[in-house]
Image 1 (cartoon, helix red, strand yellow):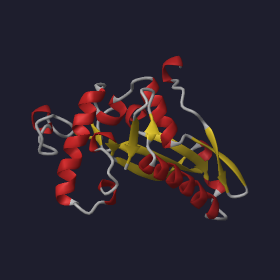
Image 2 (spheres, one colour; image 1 turned 180 degrees about the vertical axis):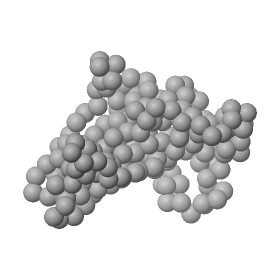
Image 3 (cartoon, one colour; image 1 turned 45 degrees about the vertical axis):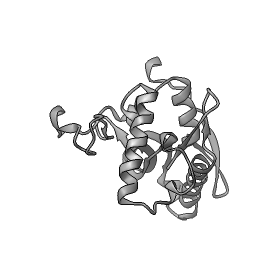
Image 4 (cartoon, helix red, strand yellow; image 1 turned 90 degrees about the horizontal axis):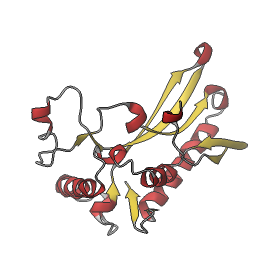
Length: 189
């Protein structure tokens, strides 16, 4: 089981009348930096190649969505990682419900349905980066929190608070960036 361990800071988020354990996106970025797990964000372990992907992605994205707020703050496109946020209720022990909240990079290794020959065309690029749908989910999906339904079944406020804490961290990761070990910053959008 040692190979499944990754040192990501576990924080306690204020939700409802108490606290709940979370793995903030900013903590994930710091761990990815510390252990050079750039393939989690870019589908490649080469950080410089990842920065080129980001620049190309935002260049193409801005042609379609020129009014996107994320591009209006003067953040270097090579330092702005596009992400998806996903929440889903599933089942755990004895079929009790549990809410799982996670995030993932938009960029990745592609999909299992596209042939290797066609994948470079997904974004209309020659660099060969793809959407983030291929690979082991432990390497591509980054857990924020898991909450048993008992904690939000009678009042949605607890779950709303949890989502609010996620939004606060993402706002900070966008506006302020996450400081990397080399002193530079990476932003999430």
